[in-house]
Length: 109
Image (tube, rainbow, N blue to C red; front, side):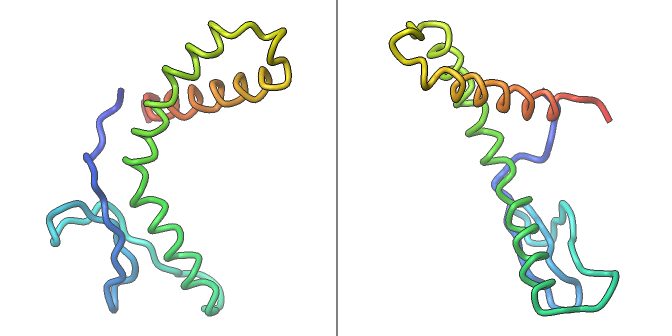
């Protein structure tokens, strides 16, 4: 798996800077987000904040996705689908989506 800065990450709004995502060290910075193009509208602040918060939970989301992959794949391999045909596509879609996320994390730039 590719290496990344371990979590937890935190989103903060720093006056004059914009939103930053950092880890435990208050002086650290993984990335910064601010609106730099077009008219500045109130909804832009909400969008930038939401993006910063989404980025900040990425390590937790990745951990959850990886933890979900193993049991979902085991369910897929062990269920008698003739008894639960309506769930088969949902489980297959979930397994494929999880694998896609993990593969993206492992890709080289």
